Length: 186
Image (cartoon, rainbow, N blue to C red):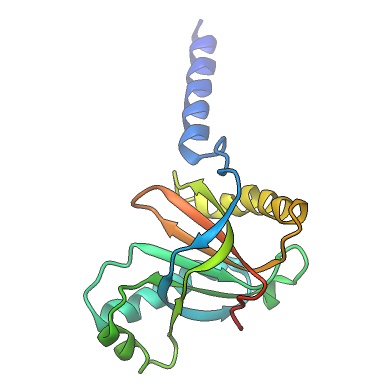
């Protein structure tokens, strides 16, 4: 009886953990449309994705030193496929969405280690993945990119630059792969 109680408790804890961590979540079906414009400030990095949090912290520190704003929507731009490029050679930018504020953009442009970029509305293949835990941004790409790539291939699209927008407040991560005539240069 005691063993059954312990096994039952372990099962319940495991089931709740799997749900909480989002291990059973699935992305939305991919779709193509014109993605909204995006203003963000980012730091440029090269290397293993395990250093993403350091990049986000660096960007946040600079942005909030310029203006007292809440950095709540993270942005990641990824130039390389980690399955084909060595981890030390992966190229990426990380930062935060910022308001369309000329004074803020000008102030940030005085820093050498942060860049401000405005992406106009552009055609992109998009999908969303639920943000349920700290693991969601790490797990999402393994679920989302295969379906995005399949969708792109099956529909004959040519897309390239990958942008991820992390919005913990609304519980979603947006994945955008922009079309070929829109390219972000490393």
